[in-house]
Image (cartoon, rainbow, N blue to C red; front, side):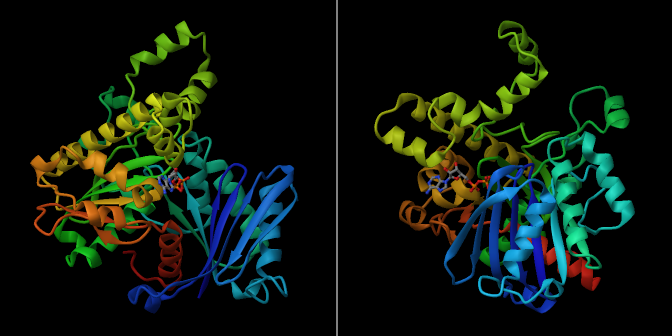
Length: 410
Ligand code: ADP
């Protein structure tokens, strides 16, 4: 069946059309038909980039004021007589939606029902920036594609297996019962995908391994997958916690917030912008949030680019060891995301010093593993180190197929 996967941000829609089925999932033979990205929604200069498999990439610019307009533009492109890949909308069998926050309500993906949508709306307080655009995208797509099954796939769902000692903060317990204040974690579909691929690469079922998965993109998080279940992750109530990221701080002394507001005379919104948009690699280096640029600047002798990368790798190393400790050991460390898949230097620098845990990187294998699955540890390394390109859209499409077929989720 053909599944349209939608990932709706506040001013963007990322999408993929994927041909898949229960049999294709089993044979790992799902096929991407086309993908695209609409950005700058809400302006007269919205940009729509469309790429059908094996064809030239196309770019359109025009006025797209709402998500509804963006979805209509996507449907026009997919069904266009020359540029398109399907005859009409009836060829799309189901739609899979990425949702950021499912709170404690969703530990799995679900088919959209009025009740499920109400529950997602109740989670808006937990993700005021992300769930509303996700919902707008869902509403637009359910109007454009009526009568089709829509699946909701949550970033937080995979981490719902974390035990209370890992997900609670050291706050009064009543704040958890009253406001659901706890650690949720994010990037769940990516960690889940990488954990799933580990089985083929390690030749062992997930239920027999302890993994630390490292999703390093613009946002970064680690996950401890203990015998197939997420037992801890570095992001928390929001995606700010944990690692140093492109523009986010990662861990911070909460006491510092009051001090910051005072000495820099900032209000709540300004503090949020500071922590989310002006910090991390970008804030430290003063140059860029882009790891490629930072590595290039560092090579030219830029001191703060060097400092930012050192801090990034140090925090990463500390957390890899922490999550290994949380599980009482680790069998494999897996890298994914733009940085994890493409930056051998970052992998090497963040693992240096973990030899005591039995991690031994093979320098040549590491250098050669760019954007492809590979084992980059030495043959005698006690802990295997793997690179696994992530594919969140594929997980969303597969969950959608399984839900439509009434098959159990993997
Ligand atoms: P997002 O989280 O937005 O999906 P990605 O997973 O695409 O982001 O990751 C973006 C990050 O990956 C950026 O910091 C970018 O610099 C980094 N990256 C991509 N390619 C390379 C590369 N060849 N070397 C180093 N970093 C890279």
